[in-house]
Amino acid sequence: MSSGAATPRFRSFMSAALDQARAAATRNEAPIGAVIVDPQTNAIIAAAGNETRARPDPTAHAEIIVLRAAAERLGQERLSGLDLWVTLEPCPMCAGAIALARIRRLYYGAHDPKGGGVAHGPRIFAQSTCNHRPEIYSGVDESACAALLRRFFAERR
Amino acid sequence: MSSGAATPRFRSFMSAALDQARAAATRNEAPIGAVIVDPQTNAIIAAAGNETRARPDPTAHAEIIVLRAAAERLGQERLSGLDLWVTLEPCPMCAGAIALARIRRLYYGAHDPKGGGVAHGPRIFAQSTCNHRPEIYSGVDESACAALLRRFFAERR
Image (cartoon, rainbow over all chains, first blue to last red; front, side, top):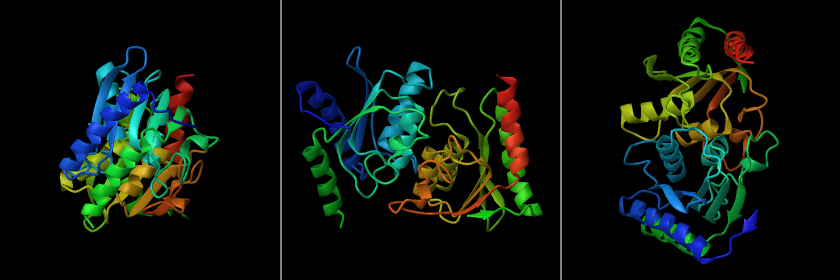
């Protein structure tokens, strides 16, 4: 696991994920956003924020929505070679889905000691039974990602 | 975690899950089936088998499909008070989703030492950070559930 350097390219894809997170906040959803990128073309294949309330669907985290959308768009269940960018450390459900989808690289912003499943809790990719481990870059644009979450939950307390 | 007694009621809901698993096999999907039951009325709220190939969708395990369907049907993201029956030990993704959905009881059939996330691997519900732990009954109709999986994969080797 590496700490993400804030190069222009890194900023650009995490900015797109942050846009999705901000849009989620305006819908009163948890402000978490994700994009799936094809690193060969730098094209964004799918982008979404959380939608658990609107659908309603307990599985509609940003990561799950973009994994499903990318698989549908590409017509294949495995997304080998594609990268996922998300503003918050994925939860165990989402980390499991990322492994099943064979995502190449996972870039995430804020750490989540309470709900995370990558660097915390069950540490899904560190399990000997994990079927696929993406390369992991954490702390990408961390302060912006964390500030958005802090502000959202502070306003609702 | 308890071993499931094969009472008539237990058999009936696991039989419904097994029917879904068999139907999945005929579609060339992994033969795993699940149902969500309201224990107050004994009504089956949702039933599905795996659909990862048909959609295609790497998250379309039987458990995820029934959780989403039940949430949509009931119009709420939390399924507190409902039970999930599935023919195979849930993977880490599905176990995480079951916790997020606040399922009351999880009944499963065959154990899955390679891919399971309940009694194996990351043991999702045993983590101190896990937000919700269902009551767990394992080994329900285990021989029928396991035989179905064994036969399916033996035919394809």
